[in-house]
Amino acid sequence: MQIRTRLTIQFGLLVSGILVVSFMAIYYFTYLNTVEDFYDRLRSKAVSSAELLSEPKIDPQLLKVFDRSNRNLIYNENILIFNERNRLIYSNTDSLSIHVSNYWLNEIRRADQIRYRDGDYYVVGIYNKYAFGKTVVVLGAQDLYGQANLDNLRTMLAIIFLFVTAIVAFAGLVFSQRALLPISRVMNEVEGILPQNLSTRLEVPNQQDEIGRLTTTFNKLLDRIEYAFRIQKTFIANVSHELKNPLTKMSSQLEVSLLKERTQEEYRTTISSVLEDIQELSQLSNSLMELAKVSENQREMLTDRVRLDEILWDTRTNLSQSNKTYKILYAIEELPEEDTWLEIIGNATLLRTAFINLMENGCKFSDNNSVLVQLIADQKSIRIEFSDTGKGIVAEDHNLIFQPFYRGINTANVKGSGIGLSLVERIIKLHNGSIAILPNQPSGTRFVLEFLHF
Image (cartoon, rainbow, N blue to C red; front, side, top):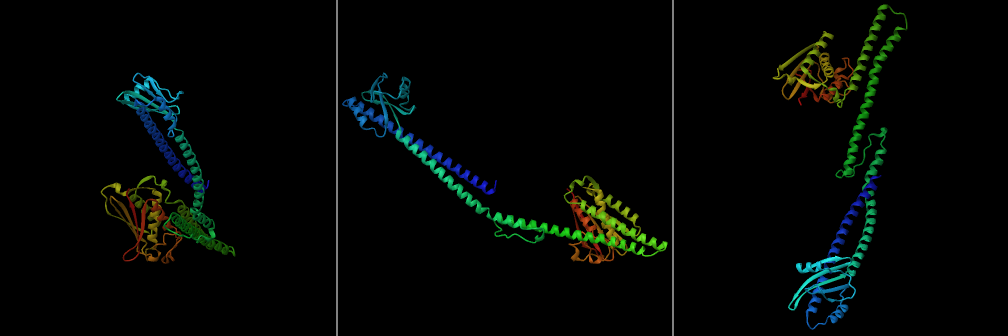
């Protein structure tokens, strides 16, 4: 069901419900007023009849004639007057339509005045006391006039209800169509946006209403989609370039070797160079797989409680053994009061990968192949700094250095794929940490990691 139809139905049901409740209230209170008014007229007529009959000079037959000539919109009235012995002393008709028992007569004397229904008849009973005696007057009649007015009112309310409901349904359909027209326009514009024209943005007529906010949200979503597509294209282009270089080098060396006979030493040199390129290609593919695996949403990978000082020490030992020229200085400025201040919930393998990249970068870009690792821990957070003495990273590259395959202007003479820092940033964010780049004095770069305790 379309929203326009649903809104029309809901609006129609709401207005119809209000009309039903209102009309029922009107009819109910009109009915009460009609009944009360008729009982008042019956009571007045009963009192008048009793007073006339109490006069000694008034003949009962004359009173009957008077009753027939003065109905006052009281139809089929039955006037009954009883004495103290419950004997009927006056009746205005020979055919009674109401039934009066001794019980009701005694109730009238006890309460002085009562009223009740007897089929279609409204009945009032009055205990009349005057100088010559006491009588009970019972007057019953049909309110045909009031019933006709109630029937007319019910018919009129039903017609008004149907007429107003039809108008409301039509008006709801028109106004819902007008209200949803901007959404239809937005839908048509969104359908026209293809991967080839992701730079297109929706027009925002009014940023204050809901449609304007929805359009703004769509534009922000398009910004993120365009950025993702751009990153994907850049990533694919960089991957193609990085894969093409070692493959081209290997192919060229092998083709040159096949042009003529070579000495055993020349073949050995060529094979060693090709193996080096293969290792570079293997390292690149492993980095790409690790980069694809690590995401901020993969919190299920964080299963253990790990100590960062132990991971740093193991990483330093392994990296020093694999490359004897690297010098990794490790320092803890102040021992924490509690060992738990050095622990976080994380994945030791991923953290070791991040620390290796930062240590290796520090050693590669320092003139003396050294990096200083400092650890500071307190009750609130753990802070780790990696400081090198290289040329440093220019300020313009600080916002770009964590993008895959991006390499700064000072890294042209050092081998690398530009994936390491991007992988480090993802691992740190996965562990609810932060990474920042600061200049090192007097030269070099300082990477600052911070993990908060929760």
